[in-house]
Length: 599
Image (cartoon, rainbow, N blue to C red; front, side, top):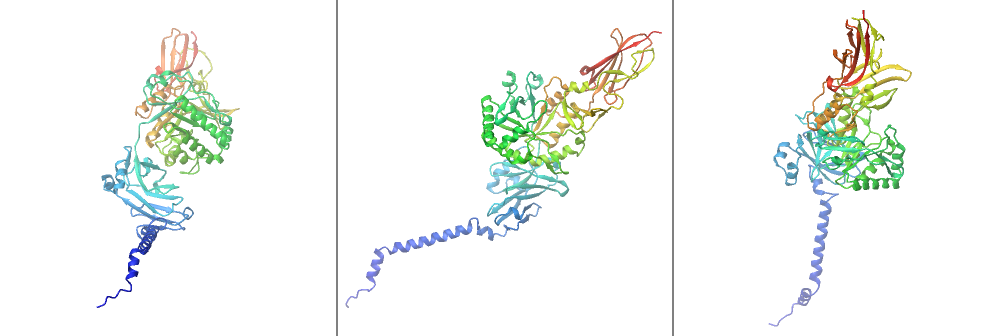
């Protein structure tokens, strides 16, 4: 049978030996690639098809949305904070399971890395997002059971490497902690805070001597003498430090300020600096060089009277300074007292506390001057309730002075301890007569406390209020700072687990030595109320110097009554004041000679 050639054979052989296989194979690969790209586009943001199909994710549209979990945790997105729609998943891991490590592998590090001063009180609320990032979010986290005292509660988030503090406000009446954030955290937890060893800072002036009982303490020294100058320059030099301070274990951070010792404030210098880019950069460079060349541990900024309109500029300046300083050097920022607008709302003026708390290592907050602020649940407590929601409590340091305050017609100035005592005057006899008969009753007082003057001790603040009669200069009131009032302020540090306290004029030899003792005990974690009040100690001596009468009375009732003896002679009536009813620690206030005439 004759052989017939397949008519398609040549075509098949050509196909097998030509380029067509590669064309087809390339087409298939291209198709596969296109399919893979399509799948990736569908699966990855912003489409995120799987999460869109996942019913556990909730859509947040341009109209905003609110998410709630079964425990009461709530996320609120307002319409103005949503630029493009996205999806969010909110879930909670029970606290016991989280602490036991019964979590996904990516959370094991979080469970094992909780610092010792924090105690987890709530579930671990996990927040997962698919799609664009919102501009803001409001968190409302239920206050857990057995979480008293509420003033020590904080919100924290696990950022993948460490636990980070979140701003928040405890609303006890609603049983929640509310936080307004400009980012969406990956998680949130309610932590109960505990105290760390307190930090104590103290100003240091030339010719001051560090007391022996402070030499081995972990003290921060703030040398004074640096002042902001025009064009971003710095005037003055820090107080020279003795070798025992330079070579000790102290932290040395000088203070840079825009106000003089007479309390006059150069707000123009700081305002001009903030609006002048060249001067601001010069100032930052000068600060960094100062810190490096002198081996300081950082710099403290005490800039007052800044225009509220320059709030963003001041924040930017601090951010630039923090970026320029070596990471191991501290940036300490002193803020001014905010103005209370309502029970829990405060206007901080030029000082954006939340932003400052993010860049500063320490934020120093003055204490309120009004004694009424220290009543239970008073204004000082309200200020700190707000403050610990703006700045991490472990950065907050209360700023107080050992000096008293004199107020005249709304104007205030500081008084040294001795100057305050001088306002009490010296010994005076009520009748005015200093030559008297035997067995005659006399009444002695202090010349600075005439009729109409009032001396009151405020139990809540520990302050003495000396109110003098109104004269041509107006009403004059002195608030006498003492060990009891300082101890009261230190209690707030313990109650709120704050970083510590900064004391001005602590080492001034003319100030109340009892204040130094209270602060020293605070460093040793020995904090207890000081119940002792100032006392007037009255002595009567005869002309031979023998003590014939002694009486100790409270400063609020300074009158001394004495009946002259039958024996004629010259007698000396002596007054002194003691901060603890101890004659050995009394400060003399003067004396008066009384002549008892013979029969």
